[in-house]
Length: 142
Length: 147
Image 1 (cartoon, chains in turn brown, purple):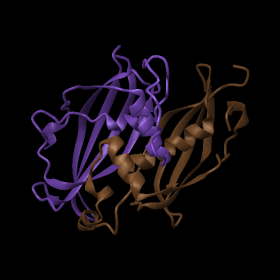
Image 2 (cartoon, each protein chain N blue to C red; image 1 turned 30 degrees about the vertical axis):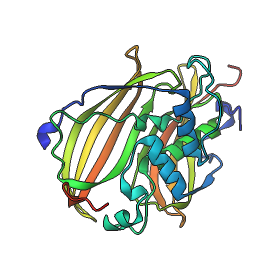
Image 3 (cartoon, rainbow over the protein chains, first blue to last red; image 1 turned 90 degrees about the horizontal axis):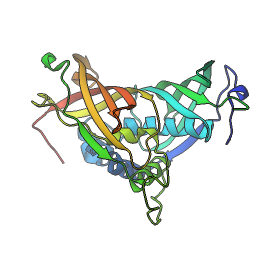
Image 4 (tube, rainbow over the protein chains, first blue to last red; image 1 turned 90 degrees about the vertical axis):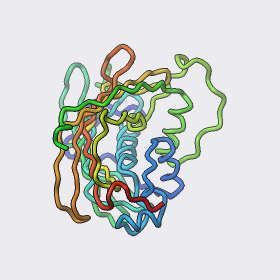
């Protein structure tokens, strides 16, 4: 949706969730651009030595995927203003998803602000990274 | 280690390029970076970065360095306040301040939780974003390596 407006959303609404396939190549790519070269994200033997079954997704990549999902939902005139994530579980490379629901909305300084509870899920559907977000949406007619 | 609470890292300044943003955004979308000519002046094309590009602006080590006892590190989570997007041409200065150091026993044995606030500012001194982050270290001692 390109021009989502504050008036288009209501408390309880769920932005369309997205499913992504995070590959080992993406983890290597993210390590390069983020400068996070911790080997648990690309070296299987190292990850297993650190107590994991396999290489794991960077926590910050999970937050980045959530922020991208929110930004795509908000459209070109919206913006992610606040984003809080808590890494409660390990995610291995593979299928993941981003979802959430609107918990509050208000108008402040001429902007529509929407609060959401957000979730990052692993391939089994378990929430590994819950969080909260505030997204600014344009008011209709502005 | 608790004597590091309140310590600030020396500031580091990064100039952000269009290419850097394009590469970062591609990595988040799981796409290969675009093959494109540089658009020219950084002030011409205002490509917005995914806000998590901020995490690539690494803070300097504390001086003196934090006496890290463990080798393995996990990211415990973050709370970001984004004041504006990062765009090509920005010069971002990053400073970390330690706000708490907590030792706990966890699933992976003894763990050290380091809570810090990171401030990202532009060259006008305006805050671009603020971040509260939790870093968890655990496992092997800091001197061990196996890779």
